[in-house]
Length: 83
Image 1 (cartoon, helix red, strand yellow):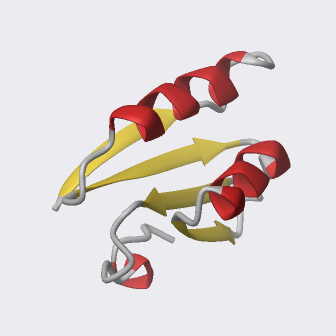
Image 2 (cartoon, one colour; image 1 turned 180 degrees about the vertical axis):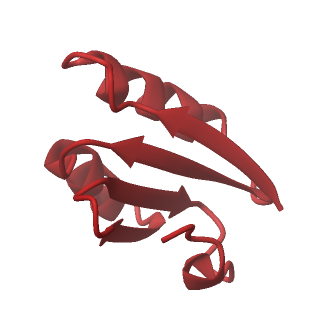
C-alpha cells in the first residue's frame, strides 16, 4: 500500500483541493491519499462520495483533520490513520 501524503495546513484555498483532485485522478488501486488539513475539506469529501471512493475523516486532539481516500474498497483506512 502506497501512501500519497498531502499536508495542506499551510496552503490557501483552492490549492489543497486542486492538488488532491490531481492525486485522485492518477491514483491506482494500491495507493491512498492521506491529507492533513486545518479544516474539514467538505468539497473534497463530497467529490469522493460522488466518485464512489472509500474515505475516512478524523479530527485529532489538536483540531487537525486527517482525510484518507482510496479507490480500492477493500483497504482498511482505519488501520492507516495516524491519529
